[in-house]
Each structure stands twice: as structure tokens, then as C-alpha cells.
Amino acid sequence: MKRIVFCTVGSLGDLHPYIAIAKALMARGHHPVITTIDRHQSVIEAQGIDYAPLRPGEASFGGIEAIAAKLFDPLRGPGILIREMVMPYLREQYEDIAKAAEGADLLVTHPLTMSAPLVGQVTGLPWVSTVLAPASLMSAIDRPLLSSAPWARALRMSGETGHRVLMALAEWVARRWERPLEAFRIELGLPRSPHAALFRGQFSTRLTLALFPLVIAAPQRDWPAHTIVTGMPRFDGQAMTPAEAATLSAFLTDGEPPIVFALGSSVVMIAGDFWDKAIEAASRLGRRALLLTGTPLAQPLPPGIKAFDYLPYSRVFPAACAVVHQAGIGTLTQALAAGRPQLAVPVAFDQPDNARRAVALGVGRAVPMQKVTAANLARELALLFSEPSYARRAKDVAPEIVDGSARAADALLGAIA
Image 1: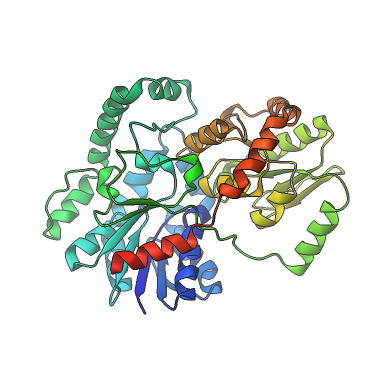
Image 2 (image 1 turned 90 degrees about the vertical axis):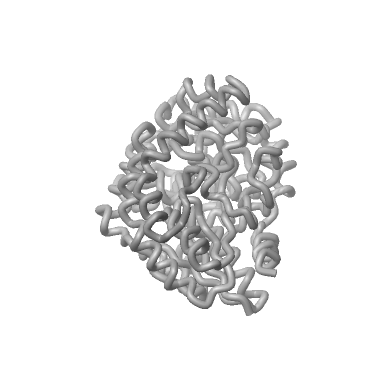
């Protein structure tokens, strides 16, 4: 039996893939442990997986809404994330990860658990890196779209040379943000890293698992060595209560398939008046709608519109006529697996690039969240419904979306061997 420790931080989208892999390892008789922030403890333990705490607690930042509002600032968000939420807690996280890793056979890292590779380097414990979305691999050949702004599209079209210049500048900025990390490396007796931890420094020389569907990004020659695309390991979160299941079933059987609007577990915190726009757009089109709002809506809903705080995507997406989502990689994968046409409304981080890839696949359309109005939601959805190729392509792609849990588990066990 092998003891494998997963280190992750972030939203449910940053947790669910590791739960899925952990369950696959448990089915093989191994002992996974997930070390992460306190908000996720109950979700992990409900699956019978061992949880190990990872500081800082969510309360240190004023709660999830305050965190989301800061992070999704399109210009300042990445800097806030690294300078204010990662760098000040390197020592605490190193201590917590080192404690969780005692007696472990393998350490598995999320891109933002920057202390975790240091634990491996100091102790000699083998470690494997993971990425959740293609944008994290920063390929100059398959160039990511870094923002929904027009300048980002122009930069992407500048070719490999332009991308490499941009990445060199971005890494220079990241090295400045990461000065506390370099100082901590020196304290631990480690040499200076040749790469920023946000860039090549995040990747293990042993193995990197790319936890996304192969259909949205093919391997490139400038990816890190020893990268395996496993497919997205899928875990759907908490199960529905009997009352939720009954209410959902009654709604779905009461009329035509609805448009499902879902914003994941982070963007939902900064949704603002998005749900009002969604309701108006559905009404303009004469369509029923199902809203997954994260928190209860205060206003009464018109006929044909139903809202839930949370439902498993694998249950509701296949019942939709179309899915409107924020293009987080987990949500996108669930929508692809459901075989339904999509309208992506990306905000920041990897979402604009994920949305671009969905459009390139021919399964849907995209409009940046910053430009969403009821009118353009209705217009984009009308175009989605009027062109049959979107639905056909979505149905064709769906069989290619496989659960990556088993392949990821096998690759980790192979890394130990």
C-alpha cells in the first residue's frame, strides 16, 4: 500500500480532480491524503479520504466572497494572488505539507502549492506536478489566450516569437513577486531556482500530469518533459438530497429541456446581476432555464425558471438544451461530456483560453463576462440554437471525454515504481 499526498489550494475546481484520483487510488488499495484549506475538509472526509490541514485558513482573507472579488480583478488579480495569498504563508505551508508527507511515498502538487516541491527537494521525497488547464503549460506553439481583452488576442496572433518575448517579460515580473520564495529556498539550503515557480519552476522532472481532455489540447514539443495527458478526473461533489432530486425531476419532466446557467464555485461569488440577465435572456427566447446560483436568489422567479444553490453537473447538463458557463476547466469538461452546445462567459485566469478552445472545437460560442448583457446573451443563444452544427459537433465530441481518474492513478503509481 502506497501513501500518496496531494497538495492543493483554491476552489472546488482545484479540489475535485484530486478527490477523483484519490478515490481511484483507494479502489486499488492505496492510502491517499489531501492537504488543503479548511473549507474543503468536510467534502474530502465525506468521501472517506484522509484530510490534512493547510494554512492559512479561509478566514485569514475575509471569506470566500472577499477572496473572489480580489482575484477576479482582470489586471491586479494574479499579483494579489501571489503577493498577498501565497508568498506570506510559505513557511506555514511548508510545515503543514512536511507533516502530512511524513511516511509518504509520493507528493503530488498543484501549481499554487509552491512550498510542496521544496519539501520534496529537502527530504528527497519524489514529487509529481499537475496542471488542470492547457494555459498552465504556456506553450509557444499552442499559445494560450491570456485574457478576453483585445490586446490578448493580438498578442496571441503575434506568433511564437511574440509569445516568447511576452513570457520572458511575465517571468521577470513573477521573479519579483517570488522574492520571498527564493529567500526561503536559501534558508532551507537549496540552490536558487533557474525558473520562476509560476513558470517552468512548477514542473517536476519526474512526471507532470495534464488533467484535462486530450481533445482540447494536443501535446506540444515545448511542453515539460514527461507530461501525460490523462483526461479530467471527474468528481461531481455532494449528492442531491431526496427533496432536491424530486424537485429537479419534476421540473425537467414538466416541459422542454432548459438552458442551464452555471458559473462554477468561484465566479458565482461575483455574479452580481448575471442571474437577472440570464432570466431576461431566457424569457426573450421563450425558453425554460435552470440556474445554479451558489447562494439562494432573493427575487421570485417567473414561470419556467428554476434556481438551485448547487446540483451535480453530470445530472443536469445532459438534460439541458444548452449550457451557459464560465469556462472553468472542470465545468467545460462536464459540458463537453454531456454533449450539449455551450455559451462560455469567461472572466479571468484560464477561462478565456478554455472558452477559445471550446469555440475552436465547434461546440459553442463565447462572450466575455464583462460584456454580458441580457440582449447579447439572448442573441448568442439564439445563434447557438439556429445553427445545427453546434449541437452536432457537441454530440460528436462527447464520446472523446473520458474520466481521467484511472489513468492518473496508474501514472502516479508508475512514478513511485
